[in-house]
Image (cartoon, rainbow, N blue to C red; front, side):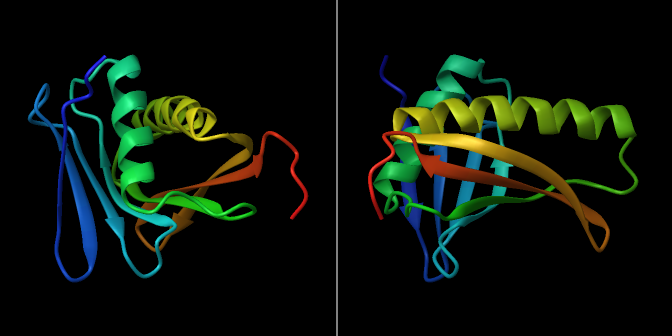
Length: 132
């Protein structure tokens, strides 16, 4: 499947969008590169979202073994609890599949409150079990 990923960058981040869904948007900070400050899946089906995220992460430098991936501000404390849990579950499912395509395995996922917004931390390992 052609993901239709569009990429651009500025001094502080890379941005990714989809030609298939104008509401899909990713933003990866350059410093630190393990943080996605925007993860908006729009109306993209999971299969497309997985392909876009995997291609985006690969094209913007990949991932380091042993690093955690942080998804920032997936919602606010004012959002209904059910919405946050649904968003968390979908993001973890989709990002975990994207990580798998890049040779990593999710080992844990955590939802944490960061001031007035909810963040997700995805811990991962090299699924091939290669030595460090």
